[in-house]
Every structure is written in structure tokens, then in C-alpha cells.
Image 1 (tube, rainbow, N blue to C red):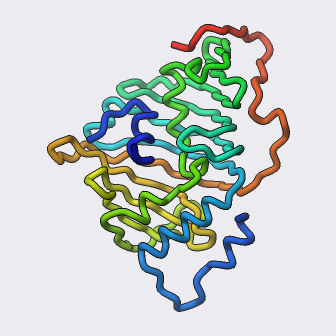
Image 2: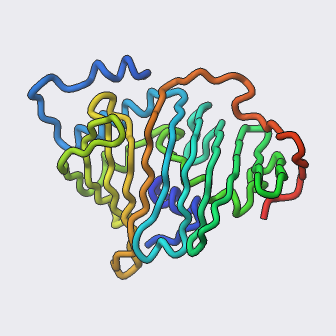
Amino acid sequence: MTRFVVGLLMLGLAVPALAQEVEKDTPAKGEELTALEICKRADEATKAVKAVSYKAKFSTTGEAAARSPEVEGTTVIAGEKKGTQPTLCYLDAVVKMPNSEESKHYTVGMTPDMSYLIDHANKIAYADMDPGVIGSLGQGPRGLLMIEYCHPTPFNDEVTADKQELRESVKIGDQDCYVVYVEYSGGRGKAVWYFSKKDFLPRRVDRILQSATGANLGIMTTTLTDLKVDPKIDEDTFKLKLPEGYKKSDDFAP
């Protein structure tokens, strides 16, 4: 199963080097890169990142928006890169469900030994060795994850895609970004990626959602700002810290 499809399923949606080292690869003035070359450099740059923190927004447009939340918050990812699940992860998210004006605050943490979800409205923390403890409530915060930062081959799907097309540059936050449209091999989806011209790290992705008949269902977007490569992380970053007045449960979250 491709990284593209796994990322959508993680959210419950149906679907048809270090920074200093990376900057040495910044193209010389006047050098033009192809869309494929940009994807290859993005793959190399993202592989080299050992840990990352960022602010993120997740949203969906079109028909799919009716079953997809709006999410905003902060993320820290670190640890061994094993695939589509981060080894170490911290998500602090405000989630607004579709057809609702109410927002909910959740904190999610994942380590090899423990996963947890804190429901701040109800002052309860669900914690267990089984990652499933975060329940359906944890799917909203997971929208903040750009799983390429925890994947051993982050942009292999883009490098080997049927089509890569360079589009007009766009600024994301303070980063001037290359924009690459991708059609994945075997009809496995389409996306638009935004890679910083400074470090080739991804700052945004628009995943184009289509039905089995090819009808457009909308666009699912994850946007990153304030990205820090190899931030200072202490041993408690990913551990459950129970706020005063909250209770802990080993039941799974709803």
C-alpha cells in the first residue's frame, strides 16, 4: 500500500542531513531544476532529518469536507523511521468537526511503550501500551502529521510517479516554495507538493481526492509553518504529563 493511501486511511477517509547540510544542495543562481529533480532532492533532504517540530493546519474542501475535521496545532516527530507510524510523536491540536461550531482540544503522544490521548474538555487522559487507545478522537489530531518525516523513503512515490509537473512557485509562511504536481503510478492518486527552495523540505501538500469513477471529491491540505529541524527535545517531550485535576484511564478513548 502506498504512503499516499495509508495517509488517507489514517484519517478515516475513504479514497479511490541536517538543515545545514541540505542547504549545500541549494541550486546556484540561474540553475533550473526539473520537477523530478526537486522530488529527488526533497527525498534526500527529508531522509536526513532526525527530528522535526512545526505548527500545522489541516483542512479539506469539496464534498469530502462533510466528513473531515479542521485541525490546527503543533507537532513534534522523532525516533527511528519505520514507515507511516512515527516512533516518537507529540500532537497538541484543536479540532473542529464538520457541521459544528464547537472546537475540542486534544493532546496525543506516542512512544514505543505508551500511547495516550488527553481530552481536555472532559479532563481525562486515556493511556495504554496499545496505540489504539487514542480511539476515533485521535484521528483528528493525526491530521497534523506529515508522515513523510517519519518514513524511510519519504518521496519515493513521487520520484517514481507517472508524472511530475513543475508549477508556479508559492510562498508558504516565510518560505518560497517549488510547487510540484504529481500523478502517482498505477492510478493511485494525485497531489500537489510544496517544497522549500532553501532546504527542499515539504511545507504543504494538497491531496486530490477522487471517487472510483474519477469524480472530484475535494482537496485535503496539510500546511506547515515555523518548521524546526532537529529541535531541542528532552526525554519528557513525548511522555504523558497529567494536568492537575485530570484523571487517567486505561480504557480506550471513544
